[in-house]
Length: 428
Image 1 (cartoon, rainbow, N blue to C red):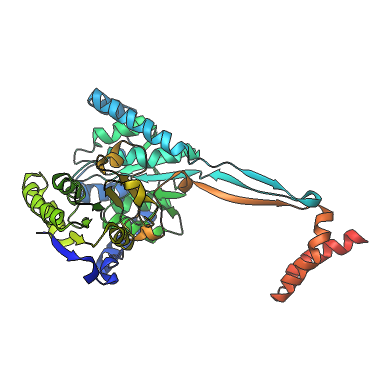
Image 2 (spheres, rainbow, N blue to C red):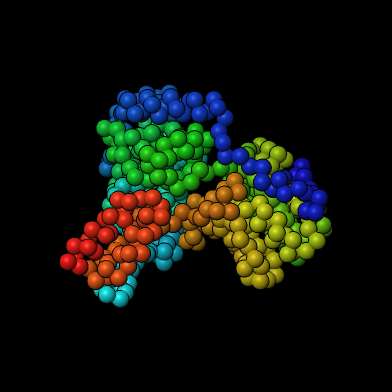
């Protein structure tokens, strides 16, 4: 059964005890995989596919024929759902597109900032026990809007060597043209180092298990990454008027993801807390993934009772959850006080699943308390910012002495000389 706590009795450390570090044995396995793929390329990817996915692959790259077969085998109504979701995601993220700017100053000074898309992005899409076509849409569309010319997608093959049709259908809707049958740390290695079939990318995005997350952390610096994704999280902040059945269902929507997932209720109503506790016990056995949800709720779930909603928001900011639902009468009143969260769902008719699949905001979100300083995946993740500066001779003469003096005070004579040599020669 989920544990219940009084907010005032909890020490702040109890909100901040999530650890993204991998076990040493995981790091050792991942390091070996990275090195093997770096040295052996495609041969290593084929061998790992046979070892981990039980798939013997003739080709690592999804063919046009495979894509066409997947589309023909996909329910037309689901294809329409994918298209509508893609439209919503594209509409939301198009508001994030940045524009270059230029400013001018006295004496002909020009300065500004330009935005340049990455040349190549890698998108990792998990496979295994479930397929996640939503990840394809959420991670590919922002890269497209940023103007990335080449997007490479990797996803684990099934035992028969194919990729789940729903994944390929989403890739078709999103417009991905290169899909590689590779999963796990080996896929991250291929994207980071490049192989015969996988071009080296500039950035790797997408969620995965502990091996994928560890691999992303270990190649960071050689390439960029979006984030180190931990287990799924939801915090439902609910008042006494909330429906306990709905609250429990929302908590279980994350608990069914993973045994390590975290589902938390924060409420100012002890009556609601007890009702949700009972409702969780009723609903868990009804789930196909009941064993996973049970372990998640019993091990990582919490119900926190506060004196009022202001303290409930305080608790939410301490936890800094991936998803926050504000199931209260006036959610917009509380919105301004929320500081640390990946995505916020306002009101009683806005379940987190809307954001997972269809509404438009991104579902690749900071976890493990990193919402204190991190943001959801966006168009910004796929562009670089470069500043530029132009000075006329007259403009340099006006400020040259001060710039040189600044450099000398830092003990950098050559810096100062690069300015004064121009000013002296121009004044002669």
